[in-house]
Length: 191
Ligand code: GLN
Image (cartoon, rainbow, N blue to C red; front, side, top):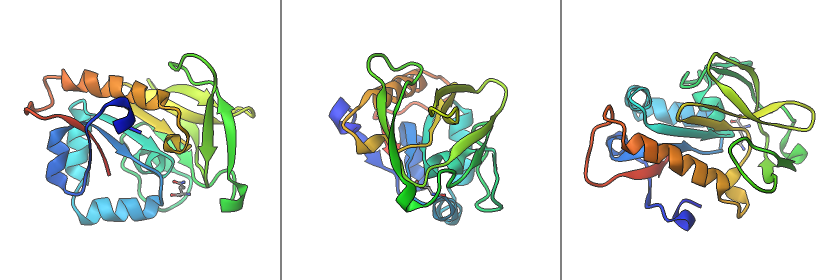
């Protein structure tokens, strides 16, 4: 999806790569596993430092769970990179996956088709966090604070690149942020 909108994206496998990127996407998957791996490969401190310095960050589905402040479940321990509390698997099991049309603040034109797979919802939102999309029954499924974006669904599973383009804007802003170390090649990465 990133390449489709002309971004030179890299897959982040080593913590040192975090210094080379202006934006990071933590994708869907399984949040307990992602947190275990981030811990084992010693990503957490450096990731926190980069985000505090203004790097753009986007957590989708399991990624949203990973970056939340608090979860309804005891596991995993989330990273607290955006002030939201999140309920995992809110809509039920794999068979309860669904698609919905969402109006998302900041996205012009038609509503976006969103794919929800064992998706979480945002239960509570802290100061300064904006809800940018809700389901028909009023559950918050996309939020944003500064350059940190969290979405419950899988934006890579349709051909609509509008949310990726919005994230690109945040990464471009980050690129100009003097708090992030400059280097000649800058990218968006994905764990
Ligand atoms: N239910 C998964 C979890 O708790 C997330 C599912 C997904 O990323 N599609 O981590």
